[in-house]
Length: 304
Image 1 (cartoon, rainbow, N blue to C red):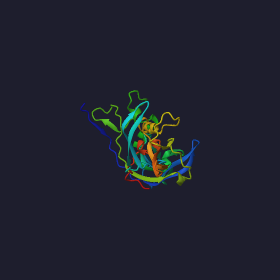
Image 2 (tube, rainbow, N blue to C red):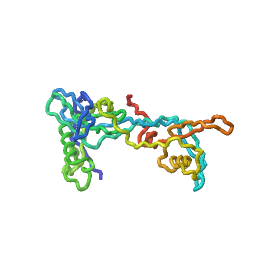
Image 3 (cartoon, helix red, strand yellow):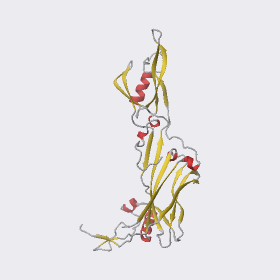
Image 4 (cartoon, rainbow, N blue to C red):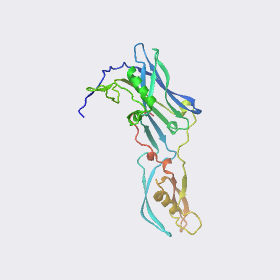
């Protein structure tokens, strides 16, 4: 509508260093887990108001290591017969190690300190002891924004209200005055705040062993179908039909199970010689292939 908006003049806050970022074993609301804290190094005259964002990344390792890919072709299945061919190839990618990144939290984390001797043990994040995040290796990147008193008070009101989404709804419970105004009509209510902040960040890594916590259980129920014989297609012998089970695991189950292992059993052929017959072992997909819920690409920043 050809309106022009400006903000009040803002100044860059002095930098405040993250003195320490660490995790400790603690019990919060009756749950044992890992509490992440930050210590801030402040000197006289440095900022006393802070806002935090963080990003989580954790490594997950599946219980079973997949070395084969398998595909069914020329499928012809009916009530009496179950026919297909299997194409088995070596798996050229590591399917059992993945990385999950969790975007920055939506909650507003604020810290204020009226003193000048530093702010210690500000709680950033609590991770329950049974979380898959700390089963293998966990990393957190914490970003610290040094704020002015005005920007701190704006975010404090926003936090008390709920979040930025609540601020933008039509039936908002209250108006939060920021530092932006309409040039020709300073009485117009304008939503938003223009902020200039110095930002510092720090990253740490840890897992359950570092905090003397028990290793969390793998979050998926792992099942195995062992030593399935492709030759077995008899529906009348009263035993399980191995070929139909293979078809069910790979064509009907969604997602398909993973071929975990090929072993060989000895048999005597018609001429009395020893032959080796392959049998196949499958595992539920999430227990051997982490690509269903994570990325196998290691982040550039990751340290093992």
